[in-house]
Image: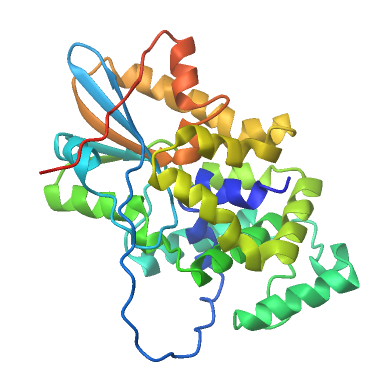
Length: 317
């Protein structure tokens, strides 16, 4: 269970929108004297392709929260520019205020505990003290999330911790790809709905939700350090290493792993199979955790006798 926070960061594209719809922005750090920022490393994330006689589908693994490092270049940009359709996990409004308007009624339906139980009643005194201290740092009053289910608070704390180390959905590939697709006026589609993703969180067993929340309270400030090797693996296109890190503990809980990854990957593989029946070129962008490790989209495709191939890295001239 130690990797549950990391799993949701990589497995759910709009996860940060869930949290932002009801959570305050992280408290700003004190202003420092301006210094010359070191350039961020150029990323070369992995890209795969599925083809038949008249259809090409690119499979691009994203890192949903990113720090502004360049990645939309080389073979990724070439593949996107050749595509006439972009498909992502979920289509959210690009405007943040519109996102909140869409999310709030769904959060009220799925994220509020239906039995009226409080978070504070399910935590120890020490854990409640940690929670209130964390909320204070985020500019929220004690008890602000007391009526929410543990998964929502876990997600909120994970999102805030990631943003405090410079990872932000505004730098994420989905945001950049959707903006580019809008500028090119190409079709945009989604594999899931925002409600179906909320239902996945809501259906996580309560014991697992509470373990994830306790992890967020114990290790939330270390999330940036824990994400660093995953970000390095993504940036270097090392899908095998990414799978090792992500799956280290989640594979011990088959039901949870299947809910977050395997079942959704199987649905997406069937989507690819159906899409191959129509001509065109599609750029499909999903969390990198879905394109690595046991039960990945590529593994599901192989079981359907559909081949996928890694696109070689090629720097643009």
